[in-house]
Picture 1 (spheres, rainbow, N blue to C red):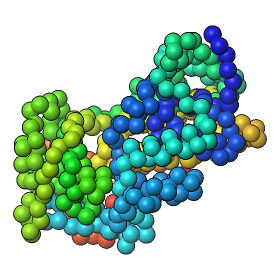
Picture 2 (picture 1 turned 60 degrees about the vertical axis):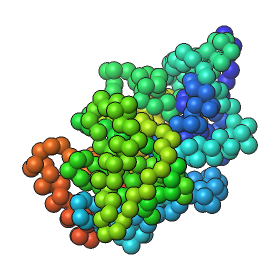
Picture 3 (picture 1 turned 135 degrees about the vertical axis):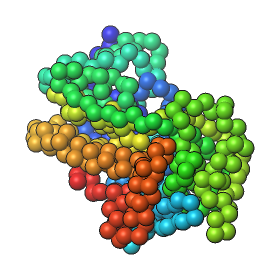
Length: 394
């Protein structure tokens, strides 16, 4: 087994892992990034599309927002809708903060380009990743490289940016960790379509048939979602059925608005779950992003929460490893979890406000809440503050 040395092992080469390695490099901390999937697989994953104000500011400060600023689409707010009514919630008027439409695939491209430019050590298609001696000051990681050779990496810290099913989350001992979860009784059927968006900003629509959402990825690509039962098979939803349901739920014809259908290039079913595991630090292991928490996509928080974690963790690791100062590292889990739980609640609130359950009492409560948010400045400001994003370190 070949032994190597670095200061930090980052497990996971998605946005959180590559962003962390970028911020660490800027702080003169060396890292190696390990990823079980191919670079092409990671780059092709279609996930989040909304970036909070704080996320955009962090990427800008890190020198990573050139394409975002040039090609992304800044939005002032969202539309809230239910049958016969549509209301615009203007985040900028309410909070002075906007959001940007810029897909996770585009963020990933920017991070990959930056990693190549600085010569970042990123190893794809590794297997059998195992984390060792995390309770001490000298942990190490073993893995099999893409050529089938066993490897050992000695480090000062390990960061799990490897999602819900990677070795990072599992490496926190059962006696130490606690977890909370909520599985929702519905899923999203999502489509990508080669058609210009039929709306200027996202539409979140409550409808008796179920929730629907009109989002976008660019000026020529639309992203749309339908609430469907858990266990739905995409084969039961041919394109015509999807567009008919979207037209009904999004209000085609309402006040002259029209939904324009187009060629569907992707279709998938996304389960809805909330999950938080604590602590986010165990010895020399730190967790970030989906390795520690998962939120339903309704509040557009998943990628933004991962960015917030990394923004806290990078200076904490730099202080620990370069200056021998453990204060920020010791505070990392508690500091990150304040924002995690706030965003978990907001994601739950948006989800339960907009998705139908079949209960007539719930239906009236949802409509009452939607009317309050749409017509009360205080209610709208609460949604805007959470959606556009609380400051990192909240």
